[in-house]
Every structure is written in C-alpha cells, then in structure tokens.
Length: 172
Image (cartoon, rainbow, N blue to C red; front, side):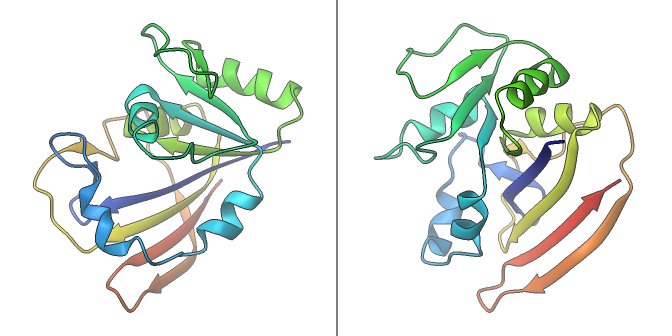
C-alpha cells in the first residue's frame, strides 16, 4: 500500500501563493529546514498541478531529481522538458499507475485543487502543514471547496522560533 502525504506551507489566512501566484512570502524562511530534507529523502514520486509545476520550473534546479513526477492537469502538456508526465486522469487512476510502478511514498506538492482532489478521493493519509506568520489577504487557496469533510487526528504540533507553526495530522 502506498502512503500519500501532503507537505505544504500556507499563510495564516490559508493561501499557498499570493495573488500573482508568487511564493515570495516564503523567502524570509528559506534558511530553515523544517525537516524537509529528511521528508523528501523518503519520497518516491511527486504529484502536482500545472501552476505548481510552472513555479517549480522557475527554480534554478529541478527540486525533485530522481523522483517520478506527475502533473495533474486537464490542459495540454507544458513544454515537454522531460521532468514530468502530464496526466488528466482522476487521482485514483493516477495512483493506480504510480503504485504499479513500485512507488510507495507519494508527495502531493500542490496546488490546492490537487490537494483537495486527492483528499476527496480518500487517498491522502497524512497532512504536514506549515503556517507561515503572514496574512496575504488573497491568492491561491490551500483549501478550495471539496466534496466531503475530513476528520483529522493530530500527531504533532510545534511552534518554531521564527513564528512558523507546524502541524501534522493523520487522516483515517
């Protein structure tokens, strides 16, 4: 069985990107690890939406080397650069192929629509959230409306010295 994990930062008011799709609100926290290196070392595959993929392609290096990458999108592939496979199917259909390929720990990177689709499909088993101490006032929401409520079990809560609040939840 595969473990599907969401590991994501968001503003206090629930946005994962600002109004222009930017991530500059995260820059003051670039020097902190928050356990990301240990987390990503265990990941076999990443799944993201098209906007998240576009944001990743602006980085100087591809952030997920050596991992299978799937871009969940209904639109056409984005300049096939070989970093990712573009897939317009449902989360369940995508996961069937990911599991068949031997991937066991999957990171749903974002955006909010992809996160919500995987939660609604009952595929996400763990949420690891980092609340960044900023109010953006608008942007890309982490929690777009969904089809179901999701009971969570708190596993961890930690306040970091820089004001970031980390919470980890299991989803049953």
